[in-house]
Amino acid sequence: MTDLFEAEATTTTSLDLRRLQRQKRRAARRRMTLLVTAVAVVLLAIGGSIALNFVQGFESSDTTVADYEGAGQGNVQVVIESGATGADMATTLYDAGVIASEQAFLTAWNDNPDSASIIPGYYFMHKEMKAEYALAALLDPTNRDVRSITIPEGKTLDYYYQQIANLTGSTKAEVKAAAKDTDALGLPAEAEGNLEGWLFPSTYEFTPGVTPQEVMTKMIQQTITVLDNNDVAVEDRERVLTVASLVEREAKLDVDRPQIASVIYNRLDQDMKLELDSTVKYLTQTEGVWTSDDERETDSPYNTYMYAGLPPGPIAGPGEASIKAAVSPADTDYLFFVTVNLDTGETKYATDFPTHQENVAELQNWYAENSDS
Image (cartoon, rainbow, N blue to C red; front, top):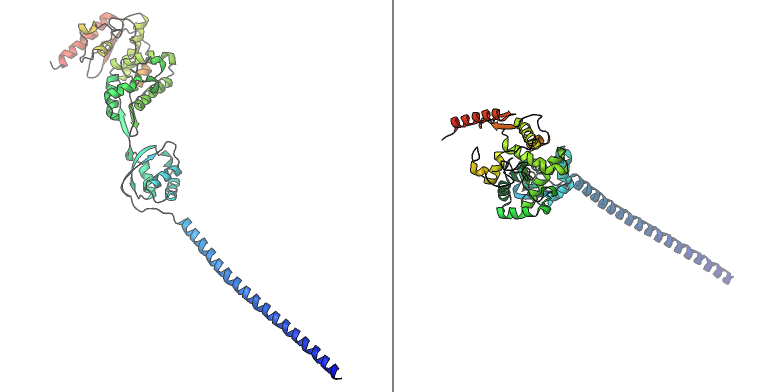
């Protein structure tokens, strides 16, 4: 009996012990679950805070674009390249310290419909400019740093060389040296190496540092453009420029250019000498209204009193009005012309020599009444 009771007691105690152990394990698991949950909540809260700060920071930087407030200070030169986009200009200005951010300039660029009209070149700007002010400065032509040259019609190469020297800071000798490399200048073969008449008279703008070669290249290209626009065939270019140069030197008014061109062509058609004082003056480079007997005896194919036909080439730089006259002369029978009033440029024409002599006498009378001597 004692053994039986002892066995029963031992069994009961083991069961209680196992039950107690299971309870302890369940309690431990509950504590671990609570701990993990608490840690997760903390981590989630921290992560949410970081994410919120990141998003807020991103939104803040996205909506706030750096920009200066005023018109800037100091001076800086920037170069807007040909074909530059708004983004290219923004980068150029930002790198030069003109604007606070590229985004600010692009916003101003997109808001201004005139932005696309900005001309490439060198510009005087200020540092630390408000983006819209920087854009306005690029749209203002007075801020461009340009080298301008105006070449009048009817001048010869020597005059043009001096003007190019003045523009580029070169000597006339250096300009003449550059003029010798006609291939580099793009002078057409039909000019046979002679630039006379091929440097188109006009106003040109260049960037700082322009060279004599660049200036002459542009002037020659403009001559070609004008000839092409007036449908002058390549093989006729030199002849047209030669006639146009004679018209340029002889005409005082645009209305007379087609008339004088008709006289030149009419005399050529009849194998008459042109007898133009302008071609003799090209040789002697003297002043005055008339040529002297000695001047007219100068032996040169440019002397149209001595030789029939056109001179070997142009004697000056003709403008487009004279080129148009050489291409489309008036339809006349005139063989003579003379300017009878040197102040107004009034010119009279004749089909015969006696009438021409009467017109010459009118010029002589005008000169006698108006000359200082």
